Image (cartoon, rainbow, N blue to C red; front, side, top):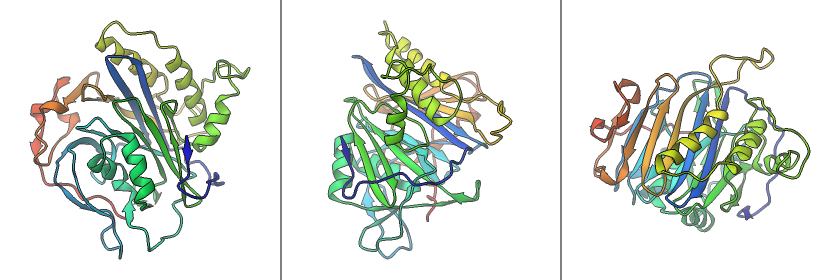
Length: 341
């Protein structure tokens, strides 16, 4: 289902920023667990830390605005931050996950004073704080509209242009994009893959050109976002049924690594293509959030069911000596300040 919450949206003619490239893949092929993987591709390190975001936290979507969105967190969550300025990825204790990815064509439009304002740095966090399912999040955005506002990224010297993927323990999915100032929402279990440019409508049309999806073109091999979309979709459709839950984790990670960008820039005509700096794998059924840094040969994970969501805590995954469960590595911390428009 595609729901524009109003006017239908068309893609803009914005140039693609080749320095920001990510991939998200949702898999519900095993009755033991619904899994989602996400690659974070970025041109430089983003000092990512893992945070426990508590229940009961009061937040303001855009401090200083005359009409900011305000809310109190109903659910605790575990998130991966970007520069400790934004929630870029995470999952809450109800099994709803959110993933912000770059989309150069994003256009949030001029400020509309009658809509509550929400900095995009808080977009994912707002829904993790307040919703238990994708359907609930989609309905909230429809019935209580707000206006995401772009945030200037000092690291790239440009405004962050992003789109949002949501998924939950039922296997439901939604892709949310703002184009020409209006939301475009693709809601349904079939929307399992998201990358970057072009916008999602065009990605779906592009996919139909390839073998296995109605077309005749062979599987593409570049790291361009449209090619990663095709490749991730192709291999996701062909994953075998896993014999164990750990083998299901490994199966999805194999798809994520196939869609990753190695270190270096192998294409001299595209010097700003990003490397994959980290990835997450989330078990939405069993509430496990795993994190893998590309600079370390191991995986760490958080088990949400045994976390204390009464206070803010954080940890730096780069500081850990070994892989494994890291619940006891979190330490109390002051909340970070979200970047604002």
